Image (cartoon, rainbow, N blue to C red; front, side):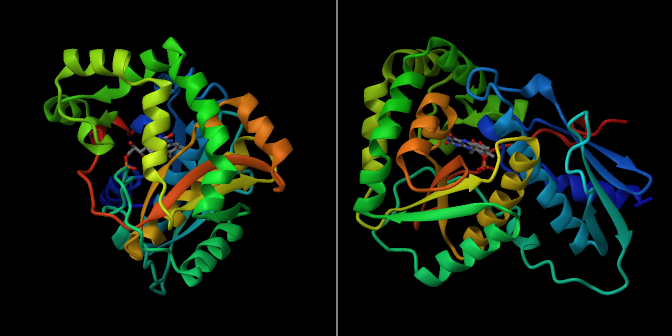
Length: 322
Ligand SMILES: Cc1cc2nc3c(=O)[nH]c(=O)nc-3n(C[C@H](O)[C@H](O)[C@H](O)COP(=O)(O)O)c2cc1C
């Protein structure tokens, strides 16, 4: 069994993984031969993520982070052959490693963030894109890059259609509002959710913030925001998996976290334009129209920008199941 202090150190890093709406839908246990990560369905997003697809992608991000941290602390980390058991749990076997392994991505775990501001006109080099593509492929996931006008022309209509559906859906907005944290105090106290300062929204307080989201964030304002995010150097990454099931979602999460940590290492910012992958009829349309194989899981924007404030995390004691 790994010592308690090592377990806590690993979990402290694992919770820094990204998750949809920063719900942190995970629970960790220390087992005789390693660490288990369980889904916490009380933190699911039934409207934005009815299949729990993004929930399992988030668990995959946490699993990858556990493995990177475990290697850094001197353990060999191995995933169970069946990525998910019938409870949806991910098991990671850990054994002491006598040789020190390079864990170069470890130091970027705390520095990674979803950066939602505008990016500069500086293009991302082909060398970096090739490295990212090869690394993602190792996890059984494909990524295709679309640059500049090609990116806008390929995805704009799907993004508009999906934004229109999402932002006209009062249930979607209600769920979003539940996870928005409009003041630093609330964000720190709860330790989860979308802290306004990380999304580019001003610190308005709960009442005014909810009012603004309810009445001023509309399909039109979202589409305008998306168009502003495009410039001639924009790089859009479309991630696809061979199948659309739990195992593929976990693999997607593992690839995403590696991708995000390499971006951080290279000084690149990234953020999500996910609505076309979230709305099933738009996702189906993209699959029919565009020349890629497999299921679209995530649409991500890449580029260079200033860092933004960091999001908060829950206390470790709240994510460990005794
Ligand atoms: C599967 C998944 C889907 C996400 N979808 C979106 C999204 O559609 N829009 C967005 O702004 N952020 C999205 N995020 C980013 C999360 O909101 C972010 O990870 C979380 O708020 C924590 O912030 P951090 O990544 O800066 O640590 C997503 C993250 C994951 C893992």
